[in-house]
Length: 76
Image (cartoon, rainbow, N blue to C red; front, side, top):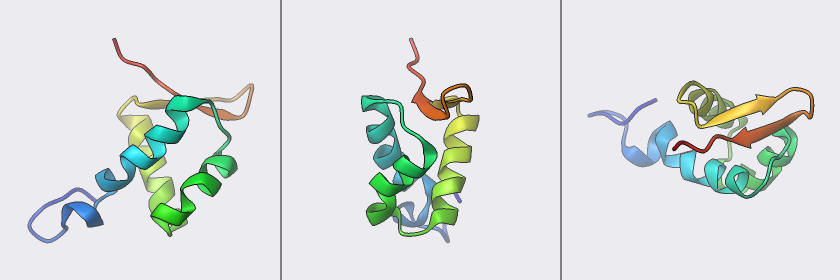
């Protein structure tokens, strides 16, 4: 959900991106651990998973399958 005339910015997925990116920019984390660190701010696992999907599509994170962690992607 992107902000528009009906969906306000705090109701959109973009609102939660900084919370997730703050955690993964410090260190690589597993999906469950990441959820545990942001669940007090996001409150809905479905919204959390949509945010993870959107950040992946935007190229802001990647999944390191061999380690089972989510990594922050630094752009030059």
